[in-house]
Image 1 (cartoon, one colour):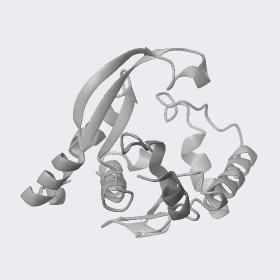
Image 2 (tube, rainbow, N blue to C red):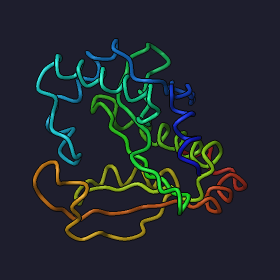
Image 3 (cartoon, rainbow, N blue to C red):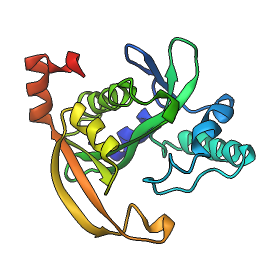
Image 4 (cartoon, rainbow, N blue to C red):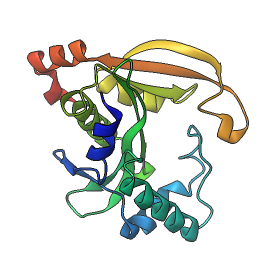
Length: 203
């Protein structure tokens, strides 16, 4: 994995597709759809950021995202339903570790669209991108204690539970507290085994 290559790939991010989703750059026209879920305190309960306070805040946030895209410094895609063009969440990379050829993914989904397998569908497409385009050898994802729904998404993507980080500071400092954080991961070898067994189609 090379940081300059990653920057070039994400300025702007390429469009990806799944059976039901289009993963593309977040755009100003997504403000209403993004505010719909990002203003919900239940959505952000297990995330590091607070609910968006207004649509104006969401529009300013997206403006900042566009600026970061131009610098190759933001690595999230908008999740858009191919059936009707509605933006229902985001998925992408939260960090990269060049030395370990590792990266971390994250995702958020509008609760109206939970329970249909859309989060693992999006997450696995991003995992594929990490291994096949970015050259990652390991992909990980983290979940705050109690967020069993997020853990299920990771398991459906073939990730295995690795460890618990006790009193972790990084995921919760934005809210002024420390929490236990679970870590799941998938290695390149495990990913290739999944492909050879054709388990990809069951996700």
